Image (cartoon, rainbow, N blue to C red; front, side, top):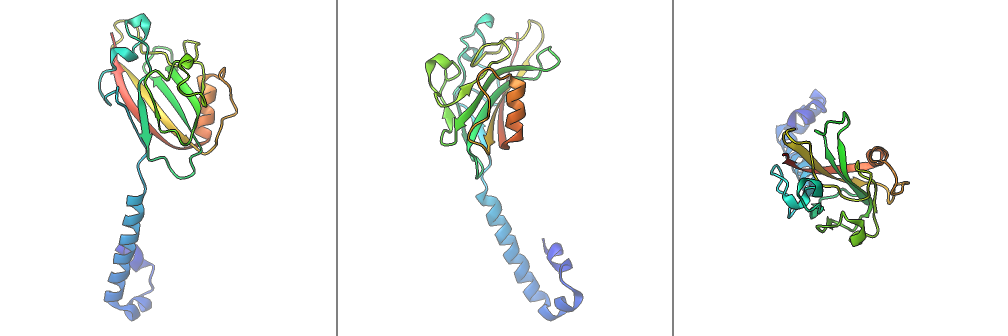
Length: 200
């Protein structure tokens, strides 16, 4: 910081101002930058049911793999100024498809919502009526739990929340995950991720 300030002053100006004044200027600028950095919150995603870096509980595993297919409880905080809505996408990058596997796609979550309860991924539950739950890669609306091929090892399941600068995306529930992802990234202000693993 002090180097930047000093090089912005001409040699003559530095001599006139003196070392004491320059030191005070550097200190003031440092305090200003530090205050600005501390006031900016980090956008984070947490869960009561998922332990980041841990193993996915059976409640969030698909019925076909012996689970209950219940979407996890999720909470987020620290959204940047200007956030007008949120989108949530759950993705398995290790699925043997060449393009991964989308397990859950939700968008148009209102900006005043900062959490989803467990089970919100079942549209019939009506727990997020303002939002749109699009098709996952199973071809159904809402949440589809983990169910990787036997013997394929642990897969990563990445839950991502996106803060968007628009109130709504111009899409409906039949939009593909790729189309939702394109629109999400075009309007993204920030994103946060929580990752768990599961395999059989």
